[in-house]
Image (cartoon, rainbow, N blue to C red; front, side):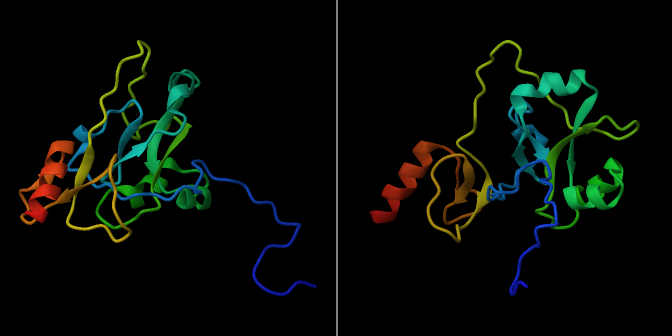
Length: 170
C-alpha cells in the first residue's frame, strides 16, 4: 500500500525527445533570421536548440526531418507530425513546443537545418529579442536582451549593457 503522489512500479516511464529536464527560457525573436539553423532553429517564436545537432547529417541521411511540435500531442495523435505541429504555429502561447527529429512526413514543412560539414565558426548573438525586466534575477549571456528605459534602447551588445549600467549610476 502506498500513500501520496507517485507512480507504482508497474508503470514504465518513457522519456520524450527532447529531455524536458532543462528549464526552457523564453527568448522570443522577431523572425527565423535570428536563428543560425546549425545549432538552433526557429520554433514557437524562439531560437531553440536543435536536438543532437552534431548528428544532424545522420538524421537527414536516415530520412528524418526536424519539426517544431508538441510532444504530448504527438504521443496522443498516433505520431501524427502535422497534428503535433498545430499547437506550435505561434498564434497561441504554448511553451510545450520543442524540436524533435521525426521520420520525414510528406507534405509537412520541416525546419531548415544547415549541416556544419566545414567546421564553420558560428557567431552567436549577445542576446535575442527583448524584455523590460527579468523575474528571476540578472542574465548576462545568450539570453533575452534588456530594454532600457525606452522601447528603442535595446541592450543588444556588451558595450550597450556596460554603458547602461554606468549611465544608471551617473
